[in-house]
Image (cartoon, rainbow, N blue to C red; front, side, top):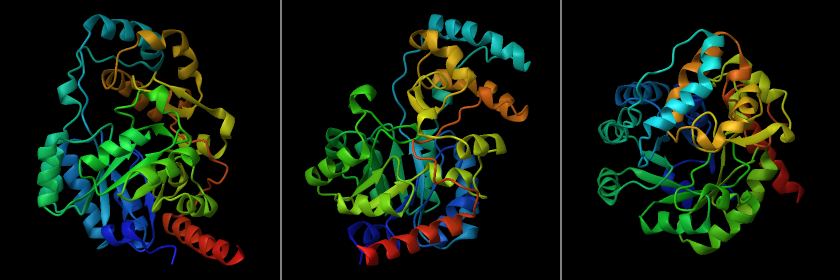
Length: 355
């Protein structure tokens, strides 16, 4: 059966379909609906505090008794360059004024990511699966999680990164192709050297490592999922397709932008966060084009633009929102999460019988 393999057995799920942990766009309701449908729901907790993470986990537990995952951002070393921060604030100042907001006067990188505190919450709340983006946790953290029966999923944007995940004892690894929306999980391979498409990355990773590989990036229908399995993946991870579900946390402006976008509307930009990410081109991205090389690094730039993104959402100004999106949005529509997953499963079954 297409849905029975090492990955589904390890994660104790019925179907090898994983909803990506899109930080800021996932809700407990979305995650639970995916898991209740037999796939794996993932809560994106990368930007949350430990207590916010705990609250979300406890809410998910009230909505499902099925396995679910929490996605965390592995913290990166940040060199705080005050002059660079000042330059970024100067560049952003006209937008601050236009939206009638004040920039943060100080940004402390150590206060942005609460990774170690979140790890404690994962253990205390008995979360069954934890996935990671932007790197691999320390061996001590990996051991602690494994000692507490947490299954671990890493992210790779190159074959070498997949090897490093296996060497670190990850239970599975996401092979994230360049078609993916938002931030990709590059850590060892420089971002621009890791712009490898899903169709090229998946079979090479699957042939190189022994842990299950999960294909990701531009997958938005049954054909993409089934093709991933044929290419050697044990499962497929889907993100952008879930953005326009009823349970998604994305606001109406973001959903509308995704629903009305095509593949040529997507660009890579570091302007919102200081780290390259794929989204729908808008005025903010265009205004930052001439300054991209002088903006603050991640996650400082993300903190500096957070007030812009928040105010833009409140004022319904999509031209200043981060419209993260993968390349494949022609399949997006407004529907319930349950309907989305069930349709994917039914379409895969039909596809198999027609081949």
